[in-house]
Image (cartoon, rainbow, N blue to C red; front, side, top):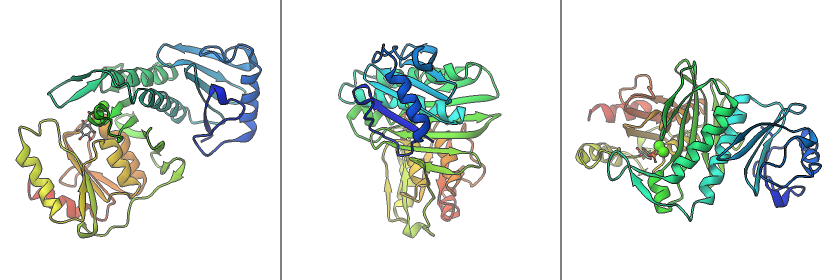
Length: 345
Ligand code: IPD
Ligand code: CA
Ligand code: CA
């Protein structure tokens, strides 16, 4: 996917953060920007040079279309301009823009995180950055697909449509609240209840995981595959604990202990969406967690499956994003993980 992000100061000497760029349409687009006398201003790149403003987005700036080269552009703040050029899949294009808008907010607020509030319990946290990221994502996606339905962690459900966008604006809020750099933005698109597109963006490492059903999984536009670990004894696993862990500590720890005794190690990193992507990328061999939500899992599970892995509930039956058991693996150790889980259910 041709994609580019540059600061306003660097326009003309752009610093690509994604490696794949299509030179010809990019050059046309750059000319269009440079020719605009009103540039740089957050809403300034508008009608001159062929850009048509589509819609002003209060939280991120503005969204533009350049029909001649199929470009969309969003100004996320006065110093950041992101644009995307070429023949683009409309869903992926919008989701990438939404993730970049949220990622820019997350990075800008990394040292200015604001107050931390609690939700369902004293360990279920939310910050104004979660809400700002969600607003930015919904602005971009809602503007691109006004008829679609949305299910977002902080603002809930909206609309009814065969296409439903499922959004976790900040997966790893506890990490974020402590400045622990393991966070992500997760965006999935379901059609008739089936996840057809998934994106997870780690803005700290600038790692973008994407999968389309039937189209494979990528990390920064390169194909990824699950690991080749053949058994638990040679595996590294990832997991996490649900928000009722204080009430059921021994029960959840019994699963941790069982896997601890059978594997080379377990990591508890604090962003389930990234844990799943790390299964997909072969960095860990399997993952299990209780009571995750669809916004934690929908995108990552598709990425695992498209990377050649497997997802299910703890019995090995079909994965349900709205269920309370998530098991994902490279496929090779799946049955062994099911057996460990089944013995404790
Ligand atoms: C949380 C993270 C964490 C998992 C929690 C989730 P949030 O999401 O994914 O890894 O253990 O169960 O709720 O609340 O930071 O979006
Ligand atoms: Ca989450
Ligand atoms: Ca979240």
